[in-house]
Length: 350
Image 1 (cartoon, rainbow, N blue to C red):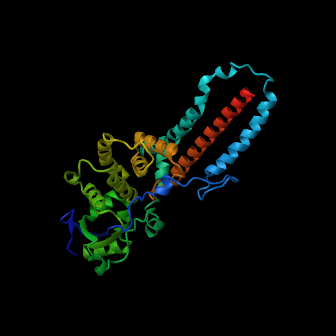
Image 2 (cartoon, one colour):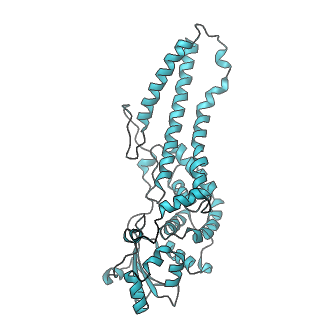
């Protein structure tokens, strides 16, 4: 076998050729965080995800407001008393309260489904949708959802001699024991498995994984807990979560992830909609952390100035869709209540 650059198991039969990614991880687009203001109000428009834009919401609320206004005028007394507006002075706070309630509803639905761990039926269904059955041929031929391709062709020597390619010596038994993806790849039905049985060793090229995150995952696979860091940053944890998702080993990685998350809890949690808040959405969903999922999704729903995106993280589409739906519902509720308050004020003043 080729001389390894990193040794996880000195007696390992597998050399993994890891090529580092060329594109940035979870790139944050400032235009998404602070989009340009809308310049016109036309008919209800929809984005690629099928959600109404803010101008469409405005049009919808305006139409609804006019209908309510006409109805209220027909039912309004001819001369309302002057002290009537002060009977319910706290009512002006209802729009904000309603918005917060609408925003918090994501916790009762999506959070409860995703954050209770693999022992609950809803999360099991989500994980089954996110991770195809490894026994199916298509799960290996097409790769995982986020391009976690375990290549089925021999490595190219010129590419693997480059400085951005690393050779990691690992144990085939440990890989197959922990990950269904590696187990299928190293089985006798694939070229790697046949080569392993015939020659006693095999080389597997893998692309686009962060080296530090992958080495930590391999240490977890090989029970090398003494090599694991006590604390890691949020971005590195998100990269490890992507690997755990790809290789379908969340139950094992979750044990260590909860320790790292515990250290991150002691630090300042981002209170604004940002890249970090979306990293928390991904990490907390993948590892079933209710508190972090509740907080990060609420921040995204209440503070995003445009449609919420996944940043190319493997967050299930139904989670992002539900967040955007809650956001649009909250905006509609606030605008509708504000319109009602304005119409009521005009009626009292007339």
